Amino acid sequence: MQRVLILMSDTGGGHRASAQALAAGFAERYGDRFNVQMIDLWTNYTPWPINQVPKSYRALVTDYLWLWKVAWRTGEQNVVTEPGMRLVGRLVRRAIRRAFDEYQPDVVISVHPLMQHVPLRLLRHTLHSSIPFVTVVTDLVSVASVWYHPEVDRCFVASEEAVRRAKRAGLRDSQICLVGLPIRPAFAKPVAAKESLRLALGLESERMTALLVGGGEGMGPVGEIARAVAARLVADGRNAQLVVICGRNEALRREMSAHPWPLPVRVEGFVQNMPEWMAASDCVVTKAGPGTIAEALVCGLPILLTGFIPGQEEGNVPFVTENGVGAYSEDPAQIAAILSGWFGPQRERLMEMGVKAKAMGRPQATFEIVEAIVGLLDK
Image (tube, rainbow, N blue to C red; front, side):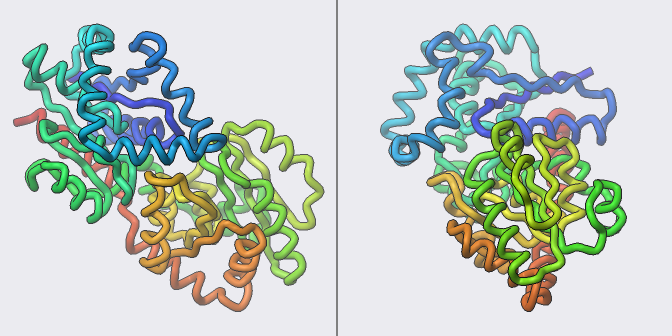
């Protein structure tokens, strides 16, 4: 059994979700040929205070956004990042070597922007190992330069802009693979009709259905948006219902569950069956997270974006709006008006956006990535 080691970190839910999608892809395509392990390298192997860095991410992108913007811009300067990575590498070299000694991988996959430079330097220049090392970029358009390293065997990206950035970072055409984002294989499987799925999920089958999500952590003004949308849909006489996915934000789930809604609303916490919730819905209302966008496209769902994390999600907004698969607004009242229009006089436009979204989706991306990695091992 060959060993696959996926390096990730719990800075937002997307990196773990991508790692899990790849692990599921290996299992579905190749059965028990591969032993796939995912590790949070920084949290579980590096010493204090470096192992505390992942915990700061959510606070940065919610409470200290100005500091996140500074960090993002600084990270785009190679004159800063290269010396910084070398310094960090000296501090954590023994810890990362311990991880490699423990897992003895036949291939290493990075799904995090800070998992290229230090592990690769250790593998290539200290351990003198030639095992394949690949990067699976989990950002869609605005890809930070630290994602790219000229010594990787393959770098999988999801957009033409990501390809251009990779080339500017010094990667060759032979290293770059444009395949789409890795999403769970369940999204690529046929699903039942919307009406049947709605009944199975405890929804009303004939109502237009909007899916409101805040990512795995339930980030953003989900509650404020949900209340505005519900009030507007009722005022405009729409035959509609809402599904609000609160993720791991238990406070939000309790707040939403206790609210006296004027129309049918289903409130959920963290869910494992997102493919079903999406397939049962007519559109998704979400911040501009790349994973949710990729999943919505595969499901043929129009996307109403409500915000973005500066830097890493910024380019996702024009990606959605300029391709005609959705709209963008940060104002809850305007979000409610847009959604009411989609469920009313603009129903035909909603259907057209759904068709375009489906055409842009890459349901086989996960399997394409996995098969390409196995190709490196089989050489």
